Image 1 (cartoon, rainbow, N blue to C red):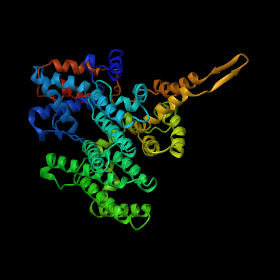
Image 2 (image 1 turned 180 degrees about the vertical axis):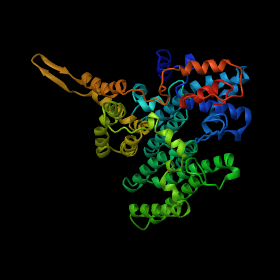
Image 3 (image 1 turned 45 degrees about the horizontal axis):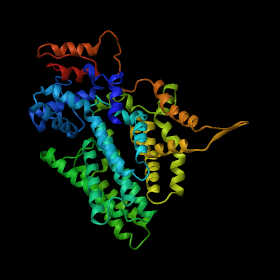
Length: 489
């Protein structure tokens, strides 16, 4: 199903990779750094002197995704494909492949609710979610596919664990530890992975307090796996500056947060034997937060205040970092395109949370918590709507199935006319149609002046012999020219 849909995108103009064009500037940045990893070594990836020449450019995301690009391109290189072409080919298909893996894990996690032909329907509905599916398009060699894929895998584990399908005893703890490693990989890719960790931890904590499940042990193992992965990554990539704090990328600060969290969870487990679980959880959380407040108080400001002012100024021009508040026609269209499915599925989510049993309530609890967390963040930055669409994917699928099975009909003199098809089409159109009127939201925006065709300019420069000059260009097209040519940009 994924292959078929991605092929349609490939041959209908939704992707430019057949013409040698990737989706946005970040894709070329990832390919360029993967190239440097393969030619200059592991420690060369944090700074690129050729971009923003002659000053250089510090890259804020880690090299983890770029290492996957390098690992996938290596076999193609052994088969005789030129290195640039090998990275381009592998980079073009890595995101759809990550989607296939993520959906395979989700199929296991969501099996009691969506299985067989229903999961094919879920896969189809996946591609109606603009921000979520857009991260997995063919031709997008970007780390967002890895981030969202790992999030879907953690949601699948959470669904299975709370439904009793992830084993018992040590087996359950081992799967929780593995899920924690996935959370650690997400965190090592971007510190924004802390929000997925927060969502999963919130659901497990509520299950322990409200549903009286033994979720606290799973929570501890989950955090332990994340801590082990984070420490291993820091030892591998920041050995010389292991104890140097950083907030816009994973560092000792985040390892300390995870360690404090584990201590807080252990304290809550102990106090839960002698007092109400909610009070025990509050004590553990306060102790952990106080410890981080003493060691690294700036952690609570988040990563944004610590970014370079030039980077923050750049963010004002990135479409996906703009708010989704419906304050204009274009923003209303974007809001409906991002939120329509979640809002339509919300009544079923609340109803099943109140009246469901077993794992059904946990799935809906996860969806509701994720909707509140990422929905609120989406109103300030639309990029978070991808995470919101991910947590609401199962309820959205169940809602459309409920509509298809409904007995709603219009009573006529000669009989009843079923209206379920009309209701389903209305729900789908409310989700899909606004995206057509929302306007472009890609990172690569048209240049202020149409006097230069930058795509053609990048190709032309790529055909020239490498020189020692510096090419002055529009901000969004620099990485493209850097990747294609031997010029500094």
